[in-house]
Image 1: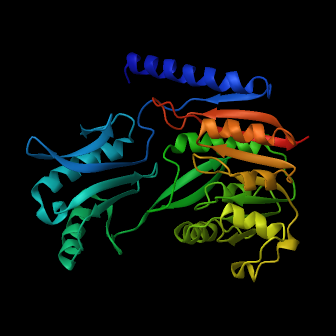
Image 2 (image 1 turned 90 degrees about the vertical axis):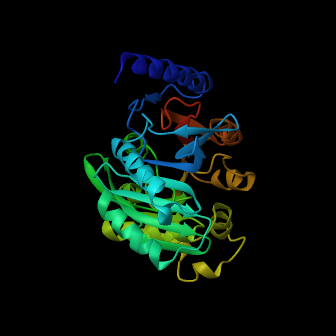
Length: 355
């Protein structure tokens, strides 16, 4: 790694720290700043496919223009190797290339690798045969997707290990389900949460996904009620609970608003027919919303919880949500975790306790 690269990263991270500190210094005297490795940290990324100068290239959009990409310093070395191997195959193999418009790479620190190839055409048996040869050649699972079609050669997931308080958690990161793109920062977030929360009785988790936070949380609370409205994520969560032998987690396929309305008795859901909500002593809520943040209904409902753990990928929406919660809750600690180095994106984790 060059000294210029390290220097540029430090400057960029210091800018984020200042923005973060300017907001949180009046709210809490306990602020954590967690930098990322400055290269090789990203284990999931996607590119478009297009032609430049009569050659097929990967591309990303930059300033409303297609920028050709060959290698990316931010990506895990395995992704860069696969990018080179795959683009050569795409250029010479019509069955792999024909009407291919997007490629998604996902690897793990354990060495697993998965490439998803997205097409504007129906995939035939010939594609499976060709992809099977390619999969062996580059030692990587392949998924071919088109409208209403998904073909898998190998596995449709990679296996990752996260470490929290010296304990390993095995997760299968399934294709078409959200997973953390920077596992080094994910480790840091999980460890920080484990050290900073107070362990109460039961916890409600909204937007649980495939269980990245669910499974570590299950060791800090008596019971976890984990909810998400994605069928794929709930399926992945069940598999991850199984391989980690997590037996104190109950699952509901509901949105955040639906879950809170069910808990407050405002609505009944057939999907909850086998779940006794009254058996939970929920005084902590864990939220990991999309970049837009939490809606007004959710914000009002979570004011009833003694402890709020808030993982944010949108700093502006987080600030708005904290202001909304400030009438009932106090920020106990805040952490800036640099999930996306060299960007303006600020990933935050906040713990609020009831006043």
